[in-house]
Length: 125
Image (tube, rainbow, N blue to C red; front, side):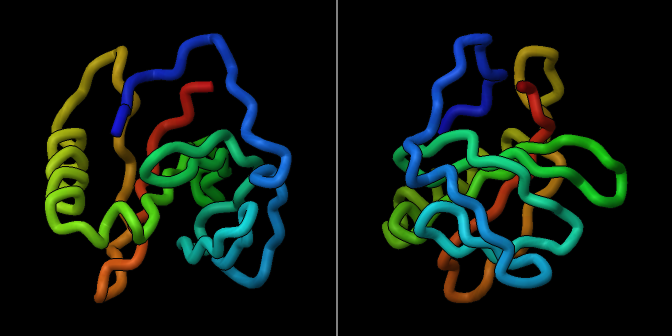
C-alpha cells in the first residue's frame, strides 16, 4: 500500500471503472463495486485501481475540501496477514506528518466481519 503524493504523471483508470452512480445517501456504485461511505462525501470521479482496491476523488460536504477515498477490498482483508499489514500501515500513517506524504484524514469504522475498509486522505492531485 503506497501513501506517497502522486506524481504529476496521471494514470487513467480503465473506462469501465470510471462509471459512478449514486444509489442512495452514502451509497455509490463505482465501476462494478458498491461503496457504502459516510453521507459526508460526494464521490466525483474514479482515480485508479490497484492490488488492494480502488481510489476516488470526492468532496467533503462539511469542509468543501477535495479528498481521496481508498476502498480496500474484501479480498485483501480476507487474508489475516494482509489485513494486519494494512491496518498497521493505516495506524502508522495516522501518525506521519510530512510534506511528501498525504495526510490521513479519517478511517470509516469497518463492518464486522470486515468486508471493506474506507480510508480518506487529503487529495494531492
